[in-house]
Image (tube, rainbow, N blue to C red; front, side, top):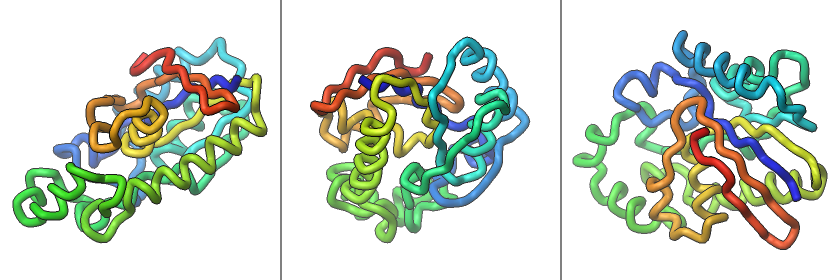
Length: 198
């Protein structure tokens, strides 16, 4: 059994500015985002992680480096990068829901087969890379505890798929900035959600 502490990065300017879609845009943490990561560092102070992984995007790297107390190597993995939101990148939902209504409705109904923003990733592509990452993690770190710092989109996709939810319902899962989710994985595809937004 692998125990995973799944952390979302701290606040960015995109989160603060009307929650703009921020997939591959590489923005750092705001002052509040740094404070959130520091609070998470204090919360995790008594945990001894066997490994720490994060997305290669700076907002996740900053959060991981702060939360890890600077004493442990943070490994980046490209499979943890946020969803490619295509033409929605940098825009608020109310800005594109009217102009890109068909793409938005297709994504709402079936994100597994449809591409975000018309030209971005499909849910199937996202889950393929996440499954590869977590399967490798389970093989390498079975019976250990790992910290994974990612993004709102990928973290919710992963949890929805593991909970057996239709992917279109991933928005029902909420993970705030710098919020911690705890879960376990086992080799036979077992999954237990221990805490959400701790």
